[in-house]
Image (cartoon, rainbow, N blue to C red; front, side):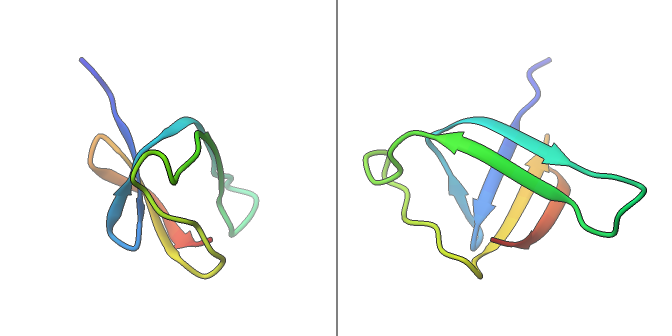
Length: 68
């Protein structure tokens, strides 16, 4: 079975990233994420800015949502 992690910025699927990390803890209220990507302009994606809505899904199940 192939498991897929998807990143959505303003409801648009972000492509071109190489690695992602999602951190969730029972000890804190906030979750965090980070990802490494290629040049997003070359992949047809767009620039990322603070305040943009983000959603990270694992096999279509929402893991994290918030803002950059």
